[in-house]
Amino acid sequence: MSDPSCGQPLGIFGGTFDPIHFGHLRLAEEATEALDLAGIRWIPAGRPALRRPPMASARDRLAMVGLATSDNLRFEVDSCEVDTDAPSYSVSTLERLRRDDHCGPLRPLVLLVGADAFAGLADWYRWEALFELAHVAVAHRPGFPIQPERLPPLLAECLRDRLCAQPELLASSPSGRIVVFAMTPLAISATHIRDLLARHRSVRYLLPESVIGHIRRENLYLEC
Ligand code: ATP
Image 1 (cartoon, helix red, strand yellow):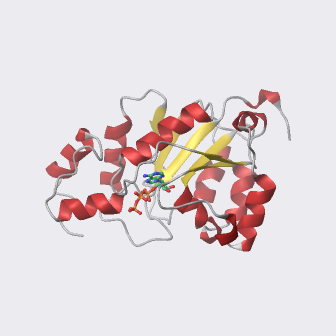
Image 2 (cartoon, rainbow, N blue to C red):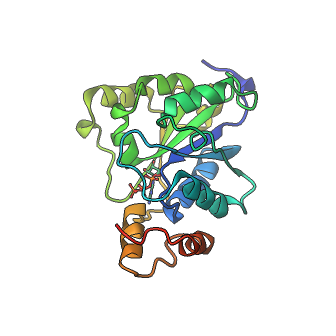
């Protein structure tokens, strides 16, 4: 399991990003520091498998993620899930990354999720295979306490077996561990932002101005 030549872990951050907001950006920034990541690869979902279709098109959501992350040299945006009509499955995306020269089979990959997403992990397509492909880092999120006793039994068992209290160990293997990290609590959600926009209320300071500019130019989220 231990291989010191594995290299600095790369964070993988998937999501609907409908739209991207400061909760996402702080999660990525704080994960980079807390977990000593080389950087973050943002992967907007083209066609999320487990939720109703996003309000904004995949292209708009990709553009907004690009605008929000462009000034951070450690962030890169990957359009692989947007470039296909197939449903977006994290396990397929990670398999593709493992085949890719940039990552290869040994590079530690860390899939970033908020606590709400982690609680639903057992519904994801081939979720147990995720741990053969990546570590999973779970960020605290206001309103979504991490309560093992409330998780589906298989996921609770997986958390118990894989939980690792030392983030520096993520660099010593390609995949398989779970770490939990605290981030600045930000009770921001895309749902709330869409609701404000539909009611013509201000969304300033919840998401970057560049993203608000795109939303205004393209007349996005005028309805809930
Ligand atoms: P929606 O309200 O449409 O469900 P969202 O705000 O939860 O959207 P997503 O794109 O679904 O955003 O989230 C992508 C990832 O970011 C998920 O793993 C989610 O848990 C995490 N996340 C989103 N907002 C926050 C936040 N404020 N704090 C911590 N994690 C967050």
